[in-house]
Length: 250
Image 1: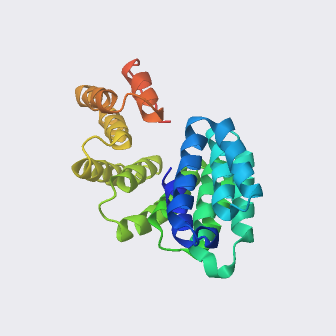
Image 2: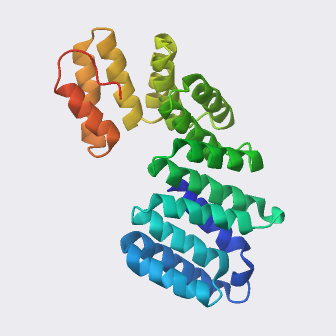
């Protein structure tokens, strides 16, 4: 979602097609994006009609957003990559944002290699973008490259030391390489920054259970379910609460 909003904001500011009538066209773009998320078929039809009428990059981005919202992740990723390829070298922020969003789409499409390549291409253009560093770290961790994930998260935390999610993800990566003290320190730091961070609460519970502190583990997972009852972290917390032995470590 962050990449969608970033790309939308940049397109609204920079696209030449918006220059003549910025208010009306900005409103059209916002309306198209809203429809793309709420009713993807309607948004896609509107975006394609707008593109045919000269909507340019904003219309193409809206179409890709509709494909993404409809669950057509590979098509969305291909559309975003094509949009990035068609932008000039003087539009680097646009290109990076499109590639970053393409990486998210490829990951959801189940193609971690293309996801990593897209986000790496975005980082080649914009190497200090925290969102891209975190996205690539998540991709790397999902592929078992935990030390590479830690490297990216180290850089993200240097750039944005108040990002609770970066500490939470790094806690998970440290746990996976058996650096449990570092994992616990990062989980605690994430929760100090954001007491309701779902990933950090999940990690804190896993680490408590690994130390045999069952009551504290259950308390962490129960809090997670109160503050964030939906999502992958909540699903893992429910599984952990339903079993009394080893934690589900995802």
